Length: 197
Image 1: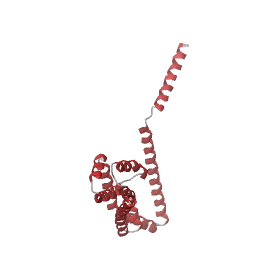
Image 2: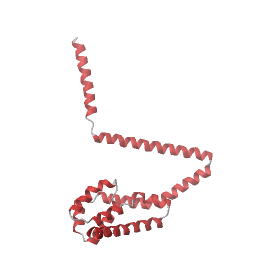
Image 3: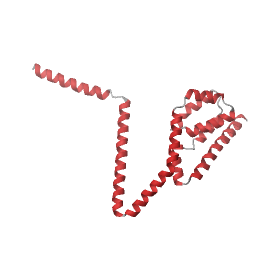
Image 4: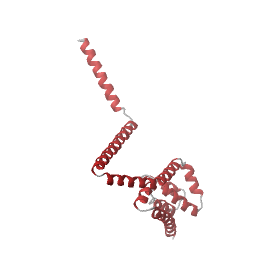
């Protein structure tokens, strides 16, 4: 009887430990598992694509080689832009938010428009995540026009520029980006004039 009780106690302790480990999982562990799952899916997708290309090569070698050359040409065209985008995003990640706020508050109005336009271009992620940041700056004296400039300039997606170039051309992408920046400043000025009147 005592042996049976000891065995039951050990089994209960093991089951409790398992339950405790399951309940004590950190959110970071779940995120890590999600990342591993997404990496596996990416590898599976890549493997499937390789298999498809191999099959297509045996069916039609010339067309398959032409498609591969086309993809390589696109990569060559967008690679410099991808590097530039990566540098921008990396630099933005190291920007001190408090110093950035202080520099925006002290800057003259014309500089504020240009600074907010550049900041809107560099910003990434969901737009609503930036609303508290803009609200705080507005409370500290940033004009609504400057906020409008920021939001308008977010129409420029640095991460999507390579795709824009690949579908159209570099000249179109440059002109569109420059005009968007200019009109973001114009919109900011119009908002400020309208709100003051």
